[in-house]
Length: 114
Length: 115
Image (cartoon, rainbow over all chains, first blue to last red; front, side, top):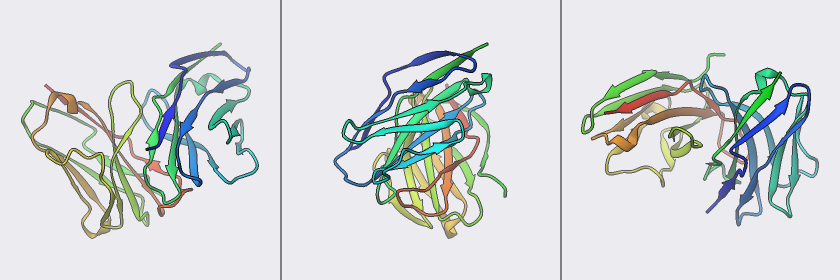
């Protein structure tokens, strides 16, 4: 069974600084996908970034990048130049190659300080 | 394009009552998901449909939960009878197809409180 671990229940970062949110995963599949979602206090889930297990380059989307280390089974999210609006819950998730077994981690609450 | 619609947004019921949630996915999205998100936790997948067929319902408590997606568009999730531990936000999501990379678009959720 697939599993996602996020060991940081809460993180603080100063505005304009970079922050790394940790994610490790466990799977026996060779092919899978990794995702990060943001959930503000309003409750909606917002897709941020995707990394395929066979992608050789780390994914980037604007200020978001994914530090993918396959051998370590980690997929950390890096947010550069933090903004106050980045304060939210962040969830790491994964699914298998068939688009099934979608699993979310417990989340990390990020607070950006002015 | 219009997003994923869910109703109602909030529901309060007493234990042992029944409740139903409705979801209208993004037009053209073949895959529909229902998640349960208990306060302070990540979402847990309850059921995944591909068109009107069930792909994965391994975590659906089938003794009290049921879901259907007639005609492969709208979907309803029902709880009968509800328990206190069913208090959660129920999220519906849709994606164009299934497959390893497929961004899921989420609805606003239905917050259920069971008293």
